[in-house]
Image (cartoon, one colour):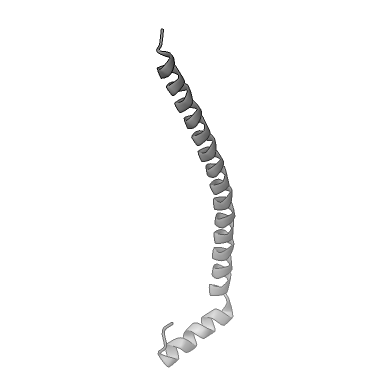
Length: 72
């Protein structure tokens, strides 16, 4: 048989660890959701940049920059 004090200590430690696990699981879910939002925004911005850089106006501006010698 276990010592009652040791048993109580282990039970309290187990409850503390279970609570910490719940907090970490909740935090992980929240961060996963935020990551999904940020990833979608990153993909949207990459598509927008590709469209801009592929546009005729962008190419004209780049040629003009080359003529003037200005690099931004």
